[in-house]
Image: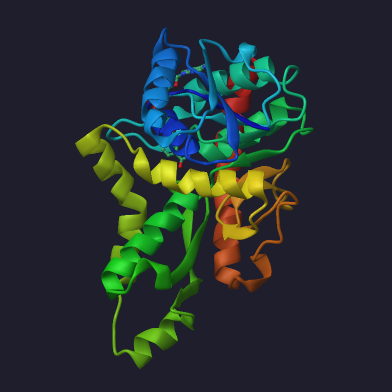
Length: 312
Ligand code: NAD
């Protein structure tokens, strides 16, 4: 039986939970939200959504994560989201306290659980969760998988080709120090520069990057927050973890760099299996590798601040 818990059933957690009920490997779903009645009413809604599909999932709802027991995967989507004008890094201090509460209250009752962190600033929060779990649990962050989805969306639109023909990844930090990995872009199997020459097409790379880095704030301004992009992007990672799919994805796991004291969660696209890898580091250009190292350093700074907050 696969038991997934989703902690924080706000906008993003609800999207993820709704996606999970259609993943046939999920037999039990535990929902948690600290706001009274929220998880319970999401549970009711999910049962209504399921009713037409003719299969059963056990769904439980609680108002604290300490009640989660024997989950295989704990998805953490609890915490404050950005408001217009904020960066994800601005959320670190407040969300660090939430991460601490959730990780420390679930470790004992969920001895086999892997953690999947969504809460922003996600790379620093995943690094913090890993540290709070004494680096004894597998903790994966959503990394730049959402940027990768946005990268492919805009490439497909700009080049007027179907999405299924577009390959390409973003790495680094989710947010300001995201690194579009142009060397990984292929259109229908042909490297981008070759494809452009052969098809006499051009692409404005600056506009692509601006879309990848800026579209989420446009969504926040118009809709209050993102929901379906995260839900679609994160289910790919959850499938990778649970089903060992072996797909190359932009998820974040801890990496140690020479100039940084502790391992930090930063994204280098990698196969997602239970053994977490291999990654494509050696296929990246020197410049891309340097930019990922810079992103890792920025993540370390945010993480260090957040760690100080929870250690006070
Ligand atoms: P939201 O405000 O709609 O929902 C957050 C929920 O968390 C609320 O319902 C709140 O009651 C709950 N919560 C707070 N503390 C809790 C705790 N200790 N235990 C259980 N529940 C708790 O926010 P949202 O739009 O769903 O965003 C959630 C988080 O996801 C934010 O930090 C946001 O920035 C982040 N996010 C990350 C990505 C990514 O790519 N990693 C993408 C989108 C959003």
